[in-house]
Amino acid sequence: MHKSKEDRRSFIQKMLGAGITATGLIGLEAKAGIQKPFEILKANKSHFSANDQIQIALIGAGGMGNSDLDTSLGVDGVKLLGVCDLYTGRLETAKSKHPGIFTTKAYEEVLDRKDIDAVIVATPDHWHKQISIDAMKAGKHVYCEKPMVHDISEGKAVVEAQAKYNRIYQIGSQGLSSLGNQKARELLQAGVIGELNYAEGFWARNSPTGAWQYPIPADASEKTVDWVRFLGKNPHIPFDATRFFRWRNYRDYGTGVCGDLFVHLFSSLHYITGSKGPTKVVATGGLRYWKDGREVPDIMIGMFDYPQSPEHPAFNLSLRCNFVDGTSGNTYLKLVGSKGSLDIGWDDVTLKLNHINGPMDAFDKNVAGNQGPNRHLPIMNESGDRIYRAEDGYLGAHHYHHQNFYDSIRSGSQKVEDSIFGFRAAAPALLCNQSYNENKILNWDPINMSIQHS
Ligand SMILES: NC(=O)c1ccc[n+]([C@@H]2O[C@H](COP(=O)([O-])OP(=O)(O)OC[C@H]3O[C@@H](n4cnc5c(N)ncnc54)[C@H](O)[C@@H]3O)[C@@H](O)[C@H]2O)c1
Image (cartoon, rainbow, N blue to C red):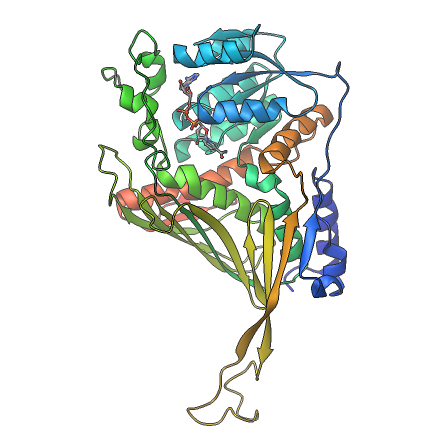
């Protein structure tokens, strides 16, 4: 085992204090529970009185902003005061859905209000850094969507701002607040799959909206869209509704499939393993199908070296994303160890353990059957899956991620995914883009969060 029993126990104790509880660990550690093929995972809920309100505003009221808002309002003790967006249509929708709120196209007006405790930032990626820093400076707690930053060079400023203004700052990779990720972390740390040596992850899509061809409203124009503000730090160009509503396809605003999707896999992987990140990153890919003027590939493959660290043994990671996928939409994260593997979802985990038949050392001549060229390799037989599944009525990763945010604000102590964690998850995803664009292998220092130039 990589960790001592004592380390492991205190690690698990810490983890169990992090908002949700996955059951069954004790039985597994004692190797007693393994016989059961199925186990139900249960989650904790927070409850607050009606007068204990956290008052929030949403900045960026598109697809994810609305989803974040609905989920936040499903957590007890959260009240919406205002919505900021750059497109009039979205402000009108917000007003009709939430009568009585104020709306604006200027996020500074949200930050000026003293009655707002926290903001959700769900703008395109190129605005995450600046709005996050300005919001913390204005005294707001921030729930910022992934990836934390648009460019690696922006990460340290956000980390410094959180330290300086001492706010709760949580990134929106909801997977790591899931029962599935939590159970996987318990199982890995308990040594159930042995020594981790390999991990892989995958996202696949095969529809126009899955590949970011979002509808463009008929009234899109410079009258309904604050185009100059949208451009932000980028050079001024004439109004282009496609760039505004399909911003993910353009490097000035989005971060490609890696920033959009690999980042979820890094977040979950780092949470489950306790890792700070890889040291070596290389990526390749191409634009194979969605040749609609986009500037980013629709297929990407990344490979990563995670060296031995106090948190985990050395292992390799491979990630893939395919927007032309014939097997239909799919995602998985798999961790492979010396004794078995974990297939990890947000609502479930499947544990596969191997029985080893035959000698482990195929080169030991003293073992019968190992002589000569026909020596036999150890045979790994699966002993049957054990499935952990969330209880009926489980509200899901997104709910518990938002609950963790508000619990953190109330307790004054950050539970999950602060700016350091968020930067360490975003960085290897952004490095994939850089590796692909520059045709280079890149070296990353995950402890100091900086690129290593050779
Ligand atoms: N956690 C998840 O599972 C998940 C899923 C989808 C998207 N996201 C993230 O959420 C963010 C938003 O994605 P989306 O799909 O909702 O995009 P979207 O285009 O649907 O919405 C973005 C909204 O932000 C607004 N906006 C742009 N610049 C702004 C600014 N400066 N101030 C205020 N509003 C501004 C736009 O008008 C638009 O309505 C992205 O960073 C994305 O990566 C996360």
